[in-house]
Each structure stands twice: as structure tokens, then as C-alpha cells.
Image (cartoon, rainbow, N blue to C red; front, side, top):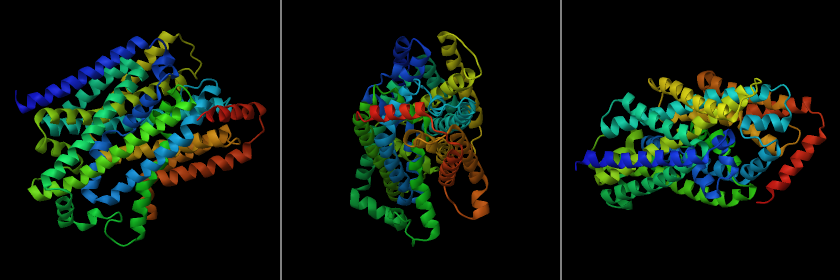
Length: 498
């Protein structure tokens, strides 16, 4: 059997397993809530690995190692910020959100939680939230399809469009069939595959270079600054802004619907503690492996004088050069796992936003069967639009992900935190803050550096603008409500089970 045939065989096994899991989940899914939240019966370990796999998309195996390869350890501040943000998310947000969403009229989407928690009779908050989900997730899904197209182009020599279509079709198949349970169970398998790939590739590459000492020497020969957390230079304003921008990725965790929806699907608030242990262990090891891939890649390509046309392909290139063909196939499958796990989660959240937060809010009263059909139809439509946007990508994978991550982090993050921990947040405060955060991200990304001359990640001004506006408007519009206070107290009490 040829090398290419063995690699394709490994991918075929992976695709078959994903679709089989989708069919298994299909048999377990009987209604709309089951399709969207798996009946709130997700085990802690599954919630943890599913959250991690859907979070750490194609950027973990392509975007982050590529950034490290190109610029060195200064880009690793992204990993530091994400680790801190994820820990705070699991520690404080997960248990209370799980408790509060059930107490607040069994909310199964983030927009419905905002409406129920804040008693928004205008329904504007829910509609605005639903629109934000659809817009930013369309861009997010598009970025993952870009990663899929690039993967197949490099790995198998197909056209970019062919690769994009393969990823889209297979992901759609098990997402349409299996819903949230199918996406979560496939995420578990995909998370394990990603972890193994990110441990195997840098270790093999380091031995190929000659060991740890030889690796660091080779990196210094290329550029000593690649091993510096400050980029090798003095602590200038530009360096500080770069570090803040990278670490600020951690702010985004509180507002990522495809991640925090896993908290809502857990069996109870008490599941947050064991889930946190599993999830953080997986995340720290995976991020370490991704950073190591980028650094070892610098050394390997310097010592062997091989060419690397695109830094974001460093893991794929190292795999092809150093590993047996069958193992290469499974590493390739892990790259696809990183991409597809995120796409499936985001398509489902987009679907829930359309059905729960737009269709039903407009006064449509339909059967569970109709809602289930509409949910699947929305998954298909969002995927088609995202695919069209991915035909001509406008930036690197990391840049595309960064924009969508900032959009959610700055619009939803403060609203989630304030809903859970501040009694006086009002519907008008949350709505004003959310719109401000989303608008700031869009405007700062387009014009901020040109106007202020500061290269600062757009999530920072967007997040804090949201907080300020939310608090200011809430203080102006707050009216005591005993029902809201009693509900707040019940949620706090339930969350203490952790």
C-alpha cells in the first residue's frame, strides 16, 4: 500500500467513526431541547473535553504553532491568557451558569437566558443576541473552513475548494444527524486525537534535531529573540501592547456561546469541579504541545534547510517529513478534528439562536418536529454562507478566528458575568453594553490602529466599553424586583454545590 493510500485510509476510518457517532446520537435525540442541549445530561468528562475541543479549533494545530514559528515565544502570551481565562471560566462561570439557566425558566440558549434573567419584555435583548450569534459565528465557521481547505491543499495536493467542500460535507453530516449530543461525543474523540498529535510531533522532531540542547541552539542561530517572552527587545510601548493583546484572548472565554453552552448541558452545578480538572489538564498539555511544535519547527527547518511556505502548516509539514505514513494519516485526522469539532459546535449554537431566539420570539408556535427540522435547516444555511465567505479568505486563520473571538468576548462576556454576579444589571444596560461591545470590535478592527496608532487587540476596548456602558445604563434604569432577587438567590445557592 502506498504512503498516500495509508494516509487516506486513516482519514477514512476517522470520517466513518465521526458519522457512526452521529447516527448513535440521532437515535438518542427525540426533541428540540435534546438536539440543542442533550437533555442537560452531559457527563462532566464529556463536557470538559467537548468544551476544549470545540474551543481549540484549527488555530491550535495550525494558527498558534504558525504564530510561534514566525515570531517566537512572544506569541505564547496567547496561551497564557487563554489558560487563565479558561480556569476562571470553569471556576466561576460554569457552576453558576448551569444553576442559573435552569432556574431562569430552563433557558437553553444564552440569548434566552439574558431575556429570562433580566425580564426583558421588549424582547430586543434576545433578538439582538441572536443576530450577534448568527453574524459572528458565520465568520467563525468560515475561518474553520479556510483551515480545512488549506489542510487538504497541503496534505493531499487537492485544490483549496475541494478541501473546503470535504470538511463542510462530513461535518454537516454528523452535525445534522446527531445534534448537540453527536457534536459533544465526537468532540471527546477529537480532543484525545488533538492531544496525542500535539505531544507526538514536537517530541519526534526534537529527537530528529538532536535533542533539547541542539534544538535551542538551532533556534538561536535563526534568531535569539524567538526564545524571548519579550520578543528579544526592550520593554517598549509596542511590546507591552503586543503582550496585552495576546494575553487578552483570555477575556473572550466568558462570552463564547459554543463553549459556555457545555456548562449549561452538564448534569448539574456540581459537575463543574471534576469537569474543570479534566478540561484544564487537557488544555494546558495541548497548548504546551502547540507552542513546542512552533519552536521545534524553527530548529528543524533551520538544521535541514527545508523550505516551509506557510508558517501555519508547520505541524503538517513536520508530520509528513518525520512520521510513518499511517501515523501521518492519524495526525492529519487530528488536524481535521480540531477544525471539525469547532465547526459542529458553532453550527449548533447558530441553529439554536435562529430557532429559539428569532423564529420563536416572532410569535411562531410550532411542534417539536418542526423546530427540529428548522434547527437542521439553519445548520445547513449557515454552513453554506460560511463556505461562500471562505472561497476568498481575507486573512490568516489566526486573524479570522481572532476577529470572531473578540466579537463574542466583547459583546457577550460582560453580559454573562454581570448577569451571574450583579443583581442590578438591567435589560437596557445589557442591551446597550452588548451593542457597544460588538460595534467597538468592528470599528476598532477596521480603524483603531489608523486613528490611535496603537496595535491593540480589539477585544480589549470592546470588552471594557461594554462593561462601562452596561453598568452606567443599568444604574440609570434599575428598579427593585423581588422576583429577580429571589431567583438570583436560588441560583447562588444551587451553584454552591461545587
